Image (cartoon, rainbow, N blue to C red; front, side):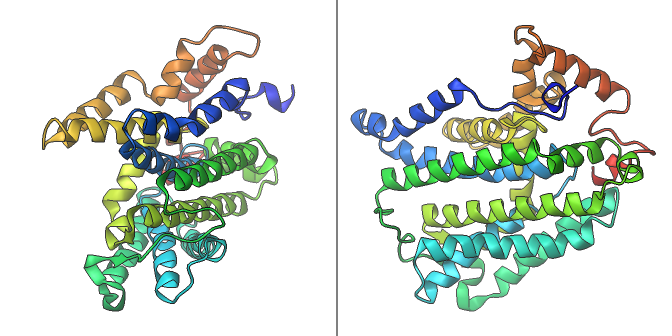
Length: 352
């Protein structure tokens, strides 16, 4: 049996993906023709959070590592851009890779400690590190403290990023590159080991798999991508604040992954799209939109435990190696010691 016929291989492309990319690329002129230019900014925000949610899905959905501090890397990426711009460095060619490097290094240091723990300790330590960075940002009065740091302008590229449509296209291109890279990573030997370790760390280690190294590598990659998302978000908002690192922002990213489907390549982007659109719609209807959003999340957990992507897969046509067959196998695995289920032997519950 080849890897393409196992549960470790995840298809996320095809002609429809290219059609979707073309439709997204055509969105700004369509919105402008309709007099709805404002929604170009909304679409850009969705793409940025889709990138951040996809990075969390790498370690949460595919690795079973429940990190409650992922927003720290988003905030570090944003502050890197802000601090560099305050120092006169506005080039995106320098600031955005620097944001990824800073967040990746922070993830490496945090992961080296957190990945040696299990259970609720892993969750609480990731939360503790994120809150440490949050209070550090609050204490930096030279960079705005609790009020945040305003950016005088967006980063510079050969294209005019001050134009919302141009900035959207740059973000779309980066999202496509990041999503494609994550798909390759998940379907690589490292990705297969990551998923196998999620199911049963003990057996992977017994067969010679370097569980810690695999999980640590995924942790660093996820942190670096979140840092890029933070850099883009800082440019979109025109400022960066400690609130980006707050634990509630990590919870928001986790909700996006759960809504979309943890462990599905499109889970993070779809979850981000649904979450942010619901926030946009519900906040215009009631001040208590979080209550309605919570009710919707409850319905998703009860009736679509594998998220919206899993709900689509459940009703997909049956074919050779089709998605419904995979769904049935995953459901059997979930009921009998499968993914995301705490187990004494596998210890995947050690990461949540």
